[in-house]
Amino acid sequence: MEEKAEQKGMEQASAQERDMFYNPHDITGVKGMLEAQSKELDRKKVRACMQRQLELKIENELYIRAHPELKTMISLFLKKVLDEQPKNVLQFAGSFFDRPSLKDVVTEAMQAQQ
Image 1 (cartoon, rainbow, N blue to C red):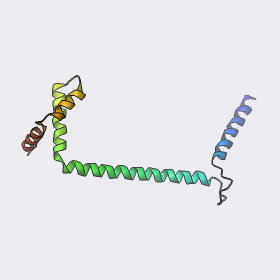
Image 2: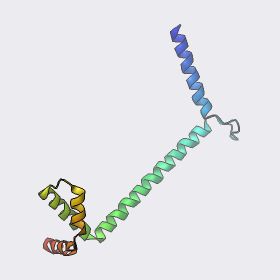
Image 3: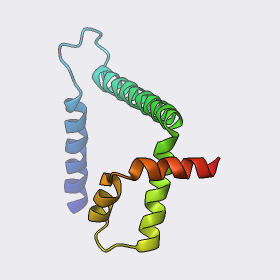
Image 4: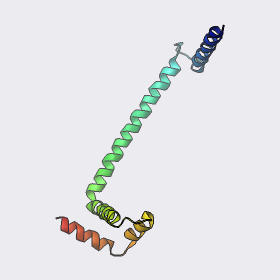
């Protein structure tokens, strides 16, 4: 008896899922058309998102290549953090990037790399 009640509950849930995508005004008359359309839209959204991510990666890579000082500055900062291991990294970062001599330090490090 419990099996029949459980089976009936599953049938009702399945019918509710079908009803969720049923459109009585569907011109095509194809059952499940809205579900197929929603899946296609989801695929298009995923493709658009992946395309945008690729575009951003390319833009970021071009920016980093155009500004080699950025890579040098980050390398210097990480080396300094790992050497000194400050307790408050945020405060340390503020001091590191806000110092007036940063430009000279980065320029010197870039010249040393060449």
